Image 1 (cartoon, rainbow, N blue to C red):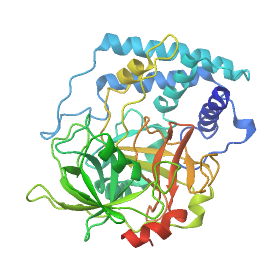
Image 2 (cartoon, rainbow, N blue to C red; image 1 turned 180 degrees about the horizontal axis):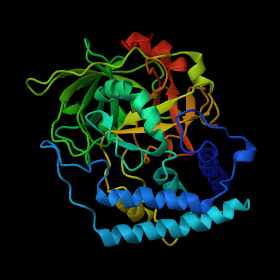
Image 3 (spheres, rainbow, N blue to C red; image 1 turned 90 degrees about the vertical axis):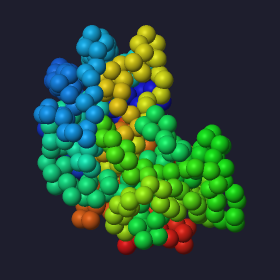
Length: 403
């Protein structure tokens, strides 16, 4: 499994190298493109990207009045983290350059970090539903981001953070997307609702194929980095599809009905009708991205390095805020042995180990349709999402619109 993961990471870097930089389109996974040729160029690019963060991520000018002016990270710690990353990444890249994919834990963790840091699979912080044009990780994504600017704004404004009462970036449960403004319907994962019930102890009463929320559960359509405004609504009811279940155990989806919570706050526009087209479940898709609220990475300390410290320092500990993560289609329906219902597709967008309930969208296709619902996996290698091509029949009766 370790060697398989190392090969997947190497192919992502090699494909970016071949195309002249990261691209939103599906990249060739041909064997001949499986190993990056120039480790030094990759490490130089990573160093430039991460050192740019010392001046602020995407916020080089004066701080707007409604944005928190966050203090710079402790520079000695940042330098220590960068040196640890580059040292172990160099060891890993030199190995894979000669076809040796037997990486140790620290080398593998370093590879995962540089795939994010070099711009191959970035996770862009959103502010006012846009990626800042001077974001240090933007690199070759500048063109696709410009093309998709309007689509990103529309979708991002409809994405909210599901959380307990008065939740925040450190106290939340998952992501959800408004799919019907008139009815106030939000689509999320079944397991997000289960966590709200069983972990957060939010009381819900069974009422046939729906749950009546008796305690405080909310969604905040704000939740952007440094912004102080909130756009909260109460989740009053949860509709469950036939065959609902967590992860691969069933249809990992739920539909939440909202009610007003804060006076004077209106719902944003909903996303366009979702797509259940078969081409989005077969690998024909040419663009893929997630918009949601990825959480802090797992507490992986590696063998000699505390990688939680490294990733936290390198990425300024900004987790639980709204992000855009572009990637590519990876696995077809039923590829995972646990996917006995053949409902899930695989993708390699960066999720920082979270973002349950994030909508998967064809962000460069006309209309940027949402075509799947992210529910779990591992960053870069094997994230999984519920395909609407398989789930439409049970979601449409709950009020989810499809085109």
